[in-house]
Image (cartoon, rainbow, N blue to C red; front, side, top):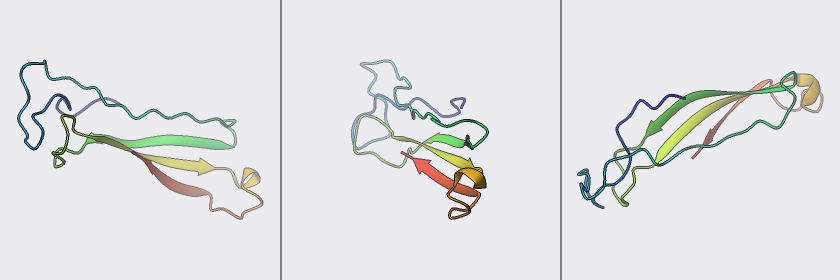
Length: 89
């Protein structure tokens, strides 16, 4: 997904101030892959964002949310719901 937030690195720990000894940058990513036939499963990204409230590191963490769609034929004969959500951090 496109990056729509301020750089997430490098902060002075415990603050919201960039450490200007380094150029602010986007260094955190969420990687994902779908290892299934697209006829049976689809993973759709919903959001990708930073969490600026956390100040314990020189990075601001990033999170992403996804929607996972699984075909009923592939989900043990209806044992699972057709749509389920997942978040990966």
